[in-house]
Length: 151
Image (cartoon, rainbow, N blue to C red; front, top):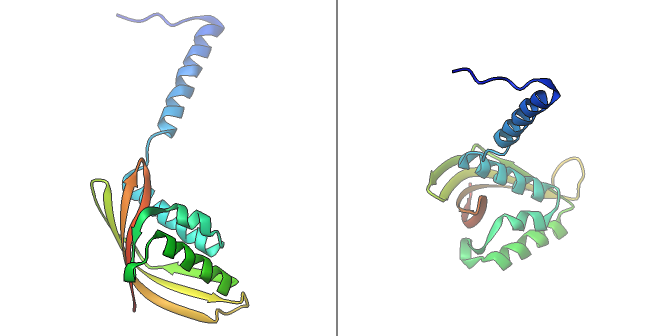
């Protein structure tokens, strides 16, 4: 049985409205967990490079734990101290190996951190191997664990 098409301007507007609604709903579709996690990692890298300590720390869970008992507050102080000591910070990440199980993830990568006065060449550089633990908190990935060692 054929459904009659609405005629006139009202029918065309209704069709356009349905199309726009469908596009909006498609645009609101949630990104896959790994894509959201990689985006969060990239945003935190950019925050460090642009000296936005608060934006970096926003990606860290309040119960963060790291090397030598570093907690959330100590990590925040460490990031701020590095920003005071270096007018320019560079961070190059190697390929990230991501393993997601439920709402938890482990991300392993190498990182080269550079710092200095902002001249053409960095004055300091260090390479690290990093293993990090992440937790999905209401759709936002938060770093809750990190272990790093010099390469």
